[in-house]
View 1 (cartoon, rainbow, N blue to C red):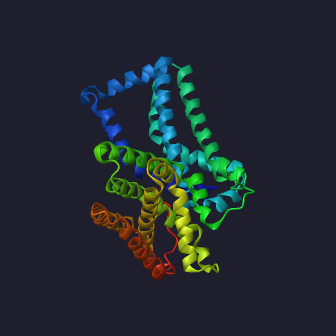
View 2 (cartoon, rainbow, N blue to C red; view 1 turned 180 degrees about the vertical axis):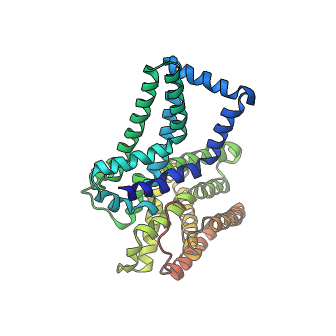
View 3 (cartoon, helix red, strand yellow; view 1 turned 120 degrees about the vertical axis):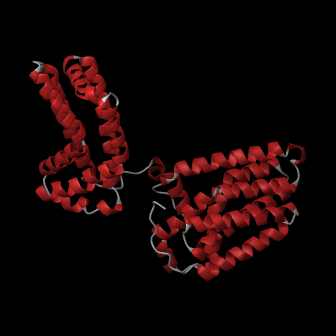
Length: 369
């Protein structure tokens, strides 16, 4: 148990103070610098006596301490599930829950140590001035806060990951047949709903803004082409996420007996589904022939952006530089109304990049990229 306590103190308590050293130093300086040095002891003694004698002041202080504790819960909970701490799930769980609680209790007490030190001085000042009830309440509050935190952490570290912990989408679709191209779509709606909704919101703003600015020429194919280019560019985060998901979760698919041509068409299917809301908008706004042209343009651009990542890997900085350069080039080609030249050109370049780089191993990529 002592070994576990030491590990928890080093990883979580030490890490918490390293990460929050700046704000803790600021709070300390604020507390000692709020009054002139000659009045500092008297000021804090008066504050401690107010806590010992006034339930209202004590309640306000308790709320502040609770906010600090919640901040620590957020930090520790995030660190528990970090890749570097996965060993705790099979090492600390070898101990009984009672021993785990004790270790986590001392770890949380260490995190709360600035509060605990100030609280114990407050309790001593209260006892010295014949206040007993509220100082005891302060002690019990900190005891409950530390123990409750330990219970939260122990529950997290002992929680099993099983099939019951699924989103509603996966539960409803558990018996559906899932084509290979749909796997990323399920992943997107299961784990990446917020980026998807932000992207679609941005897409809507782009469409609205472009056609508002160019209201006098809104039927011009160039305006529609620029809107499509901007919408696809807004999806670069989802495109990057797709490649990352492919490398992390679907790397085995390189061993499946599928040709590169079939795989390439599979990715077109992925992005067709992803761009389905924009496709509906195209066919509702433009004539069928023009809508088809713009849809093919969108798919050719998105495949070009996708296949670039097979060439230089999952490097977001480099990717953004290439996207910016391509956006400028594609913009000027669209301005010359060369959409039917651009569509096969994008597709051929994309397939060439895909064909020559698909089987290059990229390795597992961290979700923090």
